[in-house]
Image (cartoon, rainbow, N blue to C red):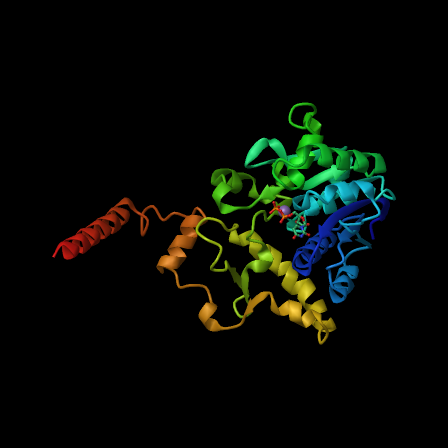
Length: 341
Ligand code: UDP
Ligand code: MN
């Protein structure tokens, strides 16, 4: 077995049991890819006992953090800014000073290849945000724990707040030199590949997809909110994830593959207790009716279209689209004529 490095850790955060599903899969994906670093997770008091038990099977270090610790003056100052609560919880990672260097990963990330080389980087390294590439995305970053930095960050939070109300705005204000000062602190995009369909640069995905190391499921469409069919072993997006807002299904599928093969069996083993209730909140289906939609159905076509798979010569050809628009126009004209009558 590879030598364990004791003083470096991957760190994540979960403030409730839902995000713990993400953290369990993330931790497992790091182990499956042979990390030699420690795995640490910060949890808030809301995380249930049975879930902590599951976390302890994947993580070396479970740290309780309390965002509203009234003994801390800086915390008290922050109480007037309740929207920074979650931001605050993430900042606690700078207090993990038994580690000399850490990599923070959001609980909604999934590791596809070994990323231990991230520890060769210095604070503060991160990848660009696809929405505004002069800002970094705070879902993956390299940092050096330090009480001094932690206190300065809190001071910055109190003085400047966060321009997006979350940790990303605050961290971009604090590490404002990131965009221009040192290119070595720019992590390649493959270390934080946001897989939202609406942002995808499809030819680049085809060219570089194989080398993606970390997928980040940003936004509200988290993998654990998708439906997994246990008969067909396939995922489908929940109804409320609207047009073009979801993630590339192949990555959501990869997330569920880890969940089904490693996490679910352990949860079932421990079941009978409270966790059974939480487990029910996942969308596991076993009916045939939810099997993949038959090819050619409008829903399937829409899906494929959203994935960038356009059937130029067939059902998405110009003629077909033109025909469809014409039908709609004619239909509306007919409705208007009917109204007039
Ligand atoms: N988080 C959490 N509980 C919450 C919201 C966020 O534990 O209710 C943690 C979790 O680690 C999550 C991170 O904070 O991955 C950042 O939030 P999120 O990933 O939802 O933001 P996004 O990446 O979608 O902007
Ligand atoms: Mn995230």
